[in-house]
Length: 314
Image 1 (spheres, rainbow, N blue to C red):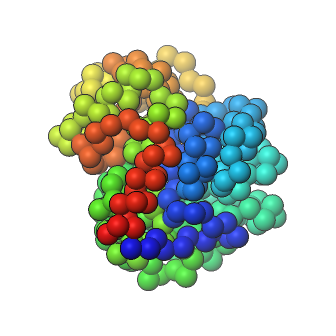
Image 2 (cartoon, rainbow, N blue to C red):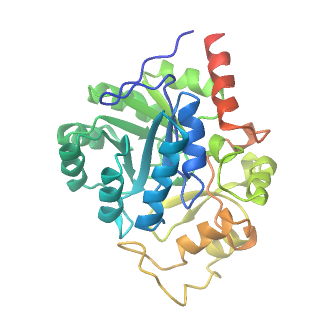
């Protein structure tokens, strides 16, 4: 079976696979470059980074790869505009934006002639994004890890979005193995975005303890928590998530003001940084719904080549 062609602006990857931009600092230049070199689209997670840090990550990724490199950024972060402008100035290939809706970014990307991909959870938002100038949309369902914009399945959202827009539709949420790819493409998706499968890769910038947690986790370990961002978050159950749910997690003593709006029920940046560093008892471990499908930590290039061989053999 042949992959569909994914064309975002003038960008056409060898394989219609986008590596999810996972913050904080799980998706850095090393992972993005490895995915791009394997024929996919590699994303650096800009949320939670300083502006100069992002510039350096983009430069490193471009030095390591001749493939397609983009960033993923949340509209919710206070430094949103500065980070977007830094990426555009560094000649980033594309920008994927979610966790809120920014109308300004369409103009910024349009002026820079940089494709913008909007993460949406409904056909209504997808149509708005297309009318504002999006080059593609990521239709993300409830199966995804991290912050969720819907309680509907990717299986329902993708066909609805596909009917509503004429730009490419990229399916996201719970896509781990070749059967998930096949289902997404059968639903009409032009590409897929995969997060947790690449979080559990050799090049992902997470501590070994975090990657081992992914391997040990089972379906029953996946729960939802109330994030300070104002959205539900899908995580792996641990001591920290238990405190959040029971209301025993104390609010931060000091606030860095990293988000435009924050409920301050806990510090999300500190919690994500702790998970990335392997301090799991104090960390928030974002994960997709189908974590049990991951049984090995593999190089990103092998993940893509294995998926390609399996799909082409169907």
